[in-house]
Every structure is written in structure tokens, then in C-alpha cells.
Image (tube, rainbow, N blue to C red; front, side, top):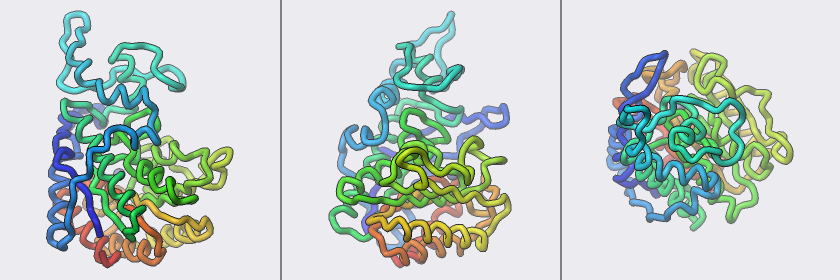
Length: 345
Ligand SMILES: [Zn+2]
């Protein structure tokens, strides 16, 4: 199995994250990636730095104006002066648009654009965020290209994560949608690609990107969003639109669900994948379903991750595994190990 990661992905070091009206220490720490790297090393899996491929692969799923914003926001922010106030240490929105965000932001101001393109207060943009985001996307791109070149499975150690990033909006610690980039890259050669997201949170960005397409089946199993991030999407009635009608499947789990409920959701997901008959699979993999994760409302143990690996292996599809969430630094290495054990990778 090939694995991809760039040390530049450690540079993003967010300082602020608002929860219940409080500025807190962020959960997406660079040490997450180090814990996952240790597991790969212990299993003898070589990790390659992905080639620096610029922005082209990101433009498959994100708008040019949004990527322009992400790339330039921090440098422009530093020059902001607002009625005698100097800007804070990171770019964060203090407004949101009054209606739908359609097309580029009508204002050239970085303040207005931050409200336009940043969907919540978990996505601060610091001096190195763009570099880490770009390199995280390159890891997903390289893993997809490894599979296109004949590999049966490849792992992209993406950090920052991506599955909450929409076509033109950052949210939920995510800036660029690595899993969607992997799926779009696989579509270069394969007519049908399935995405099976098993992070604790609904893969809302991936859903939005492919919602009107019938060539990419998006499936997400996650904690019921009625009481959990991302709140507004992830419900079972969201089935796709237009040509995408019937090609989006949400499998929300009741809070407190454990391995047995997860296994049932995997049964439904794998049945839908087999009906769709894709030529390749993308697996956005999160470990924030783990019972002791600091932001978990589910009760999975390590056996759930081993089971997920087994099910993916049983599908027998060329597969790109893309790392998403998982915030218990002391457990995510073991969780990845259990998943790879099930996968026999
Ligand atoms: Zn998550």
C-alpha cells in the first residue's frame, strides 16, 4: 500500500476555535498527523511526499475565486486596518451574507470575502494555512493517481481534513475537499466512482460538490445531525438533485450508537455501492466516532475500525483512503492500525 504525506501539512497551527460562545484551543493539532505517521512506520508502510502539483487538481472541485481567496487571505488580512484596530492573528469572519452565496463575493474587501467564503468559526486562516491545505490536497491527488496507475489501495494522510469544504466555502476545520479531489481524479479514467464517508460528521461538503451528479455516488454514515455538527445537512431525505437524484445516501446514526449500529449502516452502504457498480472507491476515514474522542457522541471501539477495513477489502475496488477527523491523539494511531489490520494492508 502506498501512503502520502508532506511535512508542510504540519505547518497549519490554528490558535482559535469558537464553541458555545467561547474561544477554545483548536482540536486539529499537528500532533494528529504525527500519531498517524507512527502507525504507518510501525506497519512498515513507506510514506512518500506528494509532488507539488499546484492548484489544478483543486480546481476540479473548487471555484477559482474561492481558491484565490484562500491563497491570498492571510497576506491581505495583515494589511487591514479597521477604525484604528489592527487585525487579529488569524483570519476569521465577523459577518455572514444575508442570502445565498452565489458566485464570487461582490466586494473586494478581505473582510467581506471572509464572511462570504468561511462558513463558521472553526476555520482560522494563519500564515501557513494555505501551504498546508495545498499539500494536504496533493496527498489526496497523489493517492488517487497511485490507484489510477494500478495500485489496489492508497492512503492519503490528509491534514487539514477536507470533507466539510464545499465548492466555495470552508467549514468544520476543512478548507479544501481532499476526498472530492480524489473522487474527481479517479473520474478521469473511471465512469463511476463511489464515496463512502465514515467520519462521525456528515460529509456535507462532498455531498454539496456532487449533489447534482449521477457519476459519483456519495454515501455518509455519521451521528444524527439534528444534535451534532454540521446540523443543517446529513438527513436521510437528502437524496441528490437533477441528474444526481438517487445518488446521495445519508445514514445518520442515533447518538450513543456503537459497533452493531455501525455494522448495519455498513450493510446498507455496501449494498448501495454494489448496486451502483463503481470502478473505484474513495473512503473518507474519520476516527472521531471513537467512544473516547473529545468531540464524539458515538461509542465505537477499535473493533469498528477493523470491521470497516474488512468491509472495504470485501468490496474489492481500487480504493483511495483519505484521512478526515479524529481528535484523540492518543487513540487515532491505534484506530488506523485496526483499520489497516482489517484491510490487511
Ligand atoms: Zn469529523
